[in-house]
Image (cartoon, rainbow, N blue to C red):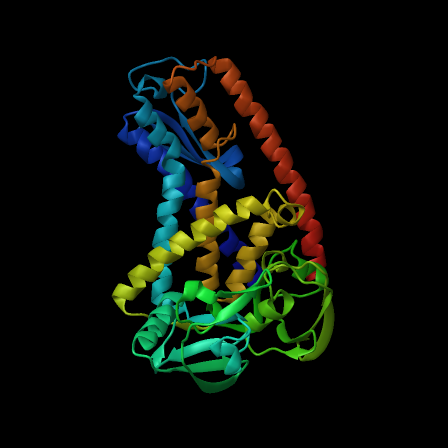
Length: 442
């Protein structure tokens, strides 16, 4: 029964993402009064079809994808007043970009749905402490989580900086409540101006402004139990599985998921040596080794998060922030694709389906979150100027608009070649996903 439920959930999530994408194309085509002959979920033979208002709707045999057949897009299609090529370039752009716009709107909607479940508790993690600064003198250490300053909860670096500036202006100490792997304690620290050594000389730290000497980053409070493990990640290759509870890293006890990240990659540039990770699985202790050079990205683990409900106004703000951060993360991951490490992290259909099934088992928050990531990534990826993708069609439309005429048959050939290349790449990634999944679940 559980297997049937997983299959249904995967089908529903992928079906929803694909439907919204194709519906975006359909909607803008209809609004532009362009004839749409077919709307299909899936590829291959049509299993079920019905016609409504001049468009035949299909459910096809192979569910990974879909298409909208718009009159006037093919070179041999006749040009009429209701065909794609007869419309203004801006309307054609909207038709082409409509699918991605639909995916992005769905991502925003899903993030607001998440607000009814809760948001991850935010906290500020001390990444580093400047030697000789006030924080160092008061034994504040890298890996500490700043819970409160002057009895006010701290959830981001901006609010921390504001409290420090306020205390500095009043020439008083700040009372900082810290969590060091489960031990909660308080330190009173006075912000002050101090110097650091740079190129053999003493120079003012923080441009001579009063400071605690703490380098920090906003993080989500997470437990050390793994929720999701990507199939081709270093965690999967090392033997870490979903549901494992991390007990120690390199001999250091772990109480929070952030401890795992920090202990494996303290400088954010990759582990300097292989690291032993002790974990608990089904009541048994196991030890695995994470190789040298492991980064937070290549580790490939999402831990269970502590969730909290927020007031409505803060919910709206956090939801929009999450859309922005997810978009930034997607752009950042594109940079990683140029590296061997990043290329290994790309998932195909099998890897995506496995993540959906893992998120279903982890809980509704993770299922909605993964659906949001998938739909946003699909929407943004489709805008890439690559033949066969929507972005490729937009590129040819732009060239044609600025006077660079390209023969329609040559354009169609470019899209066919692009399609073959993309399918070949998907098949290659799928094969690699299959190997990764056999290791993850074997």
